Length: 156
Image 1 (cartoon, rainbow, N blue to C red):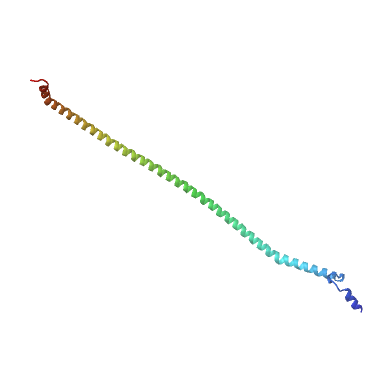
Image 2: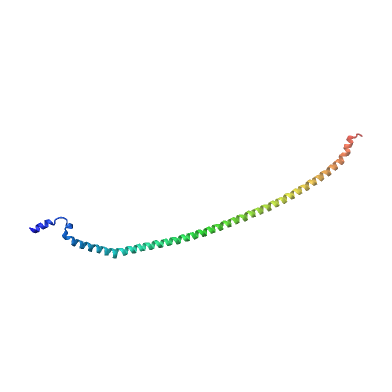
């Protein structure tokens, strides 16, 4: 019967039985040490390797991005220089074309003015010839008409 009374006394939560505390504390310590060793030996190096690889990849990507940025800036600088050069060439071509058109226009105006002057001179010469001819015709006509006018004015 005594064993039946002991069984009744031990009925309940075995974790709260003070007779098992030493045993439970020992296995708790063993378990925690085992978990610590597993984490320290297996998990931590793998995590450190993974983090190191990630950090290395990120640093390489950042360095590569900086190199691309530098190349892009250099390309942009070269493009701006080429654009400026092309603009200068275009402006020079425009200036030379304007000057050439101006020169051609001035030459054409000069030729037209010379032709107009020639035509005016020719017209003036023609007018002078016509005046001389008209003057001569008037003299000839007046020589012919003068005796007839006198006959009409002075009756015989």
